Length: 192
Image: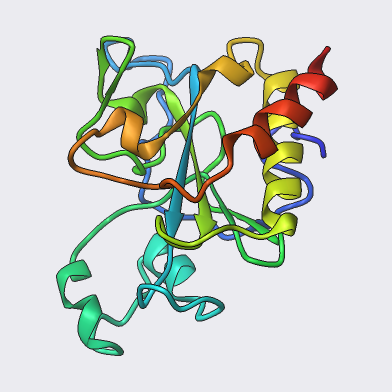
């Protein structure tokens, strides 16, 4: 997998979202410059526990009709997007370029730094915190993380965390069914 000069994953379908920080112009020196210092693994399904609906991608691009399912009512007006979504088959969609802060983490902190959206990349896996993930998802996630760590020198396997780690008590994804060894062991092998 390659990351191109526009900070996009070449193997991903591009579906741009406005749910991100805008790029800083040269005359706006007071704004934070986004730097990739962490990767946050999330999981999502809409409706909860249903896969292949396309609803998460519509939420991330602001196209979700919150009237299409009763459980979507609390999503009305929500502006959220990860950088990437990996579906159950391992297909990848990218919503935000890697040089911009995607709105994926909410109120969060990691290693004493508040506001993880400003310095982390968000990757959503289609799934729930209480179910397992597919082989195709682990393969795609490993390949993505390897490409990100190779492209951005500030990233490493030790900078990959779950949403529950940066928002404890508020979030529980990717959850106890996520097998960290299935990601980190092959990733370490590939990066040495």
